Every structure is written in C-alpha cells, then in structure tokens.
Length: 116
Figure 1 (cartoon, rainbow, N blue to C red):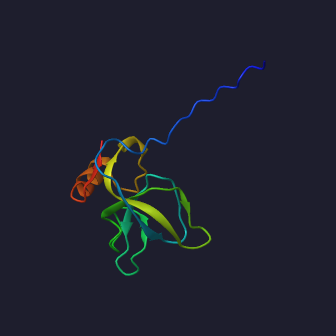
Figure 2: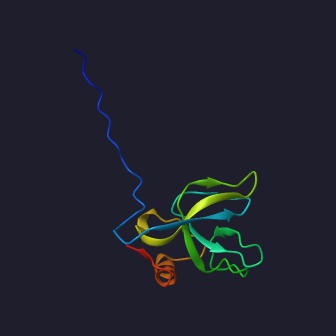
Figure 3: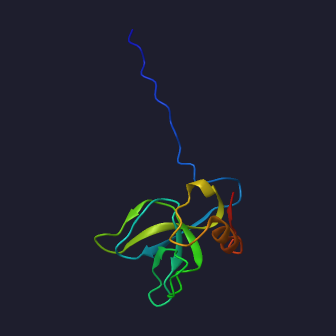
C-alpha cells in the first residue's frame, strides 16, 4: 500500500463575512494587470473600470467596486466579475496611488461593500 500524498487547500481569502455578495460583470479598461481584490473606479466617459487612484480626474478617483478575478488587459479591454456588495479583508485589497485603506473603507461603505 502506497503512502497517500497530502496537500493543503489554501482558499483565496478575499471574503470576510456573511453579508450577501452581489457580483456583476464590467469592462476593465485596457493596459492593466490587476489582481483579485483591486479597488476599482469607473471612468465617467467610457464606463470602463480602472484601478482607483486619488489623483484621477475622470471619475475613477472614487472607489466603486472590487475586482473579483485576476484580470490582464494588456492586450485589450476585458469583461470581468466585480463585487458590488459584501465583506472583504482589507489586507487582500490592491489600492491605487494615493488611495488609503481608510479612504476606500469610507467610500465603499455607502455601496454596501464593507472592508474588515
């Protein structure tokens, strides 16, 4: 009888609680390589989502959603799942330049996205 090989499953720990998770799809703008958990802002003119950066002036400076799947748009814009509601771990989020965790937490709270 052979020895069984043991493996440990380590889940992706983005979720942080039992608040209902609402996921939708959105277009992620070209030229980005984003990990699951990226805090996204929406560009007003195109409706596409980009990594939220506080210095932006195109609407994407305001956090609107959290990316729910690692996405690479270096070859063109892609449709990807985004979280619209739920509880997430702050340690798993990717924040854009100038955006603090406290700012993201305050902005997303009104959208029923809670950062723990």
